[in-house]
Length: 108
Image (cartoon, rainbow, N blue to C red; front, side, top):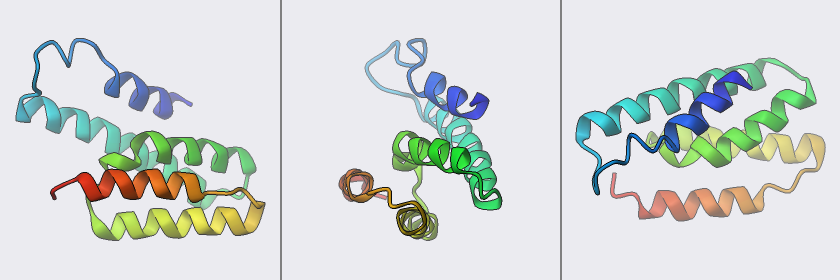
């Protein structure tokens, strides 16, 4: 939960959003913290078969998935969601839909 908390606090840090726009340096700092912690959580979920790791990973995908800009990483996220849905019966269509909407709006 530490890494999830780091993502949450970094994204919602009021000091970061003092001005109307983020400077490129602030954006890169936020992106780095979010993605580093996201990768740690996903690494744990991918190497553990414990259901709790997958629950945290699912929530982390909702929170940090929009920050993923790499197309291969996005494909892997979708693959992971499909694996979890098949293994546990958790519907993931709403997560996939939200991610697609966010990613489609991203010009990168």
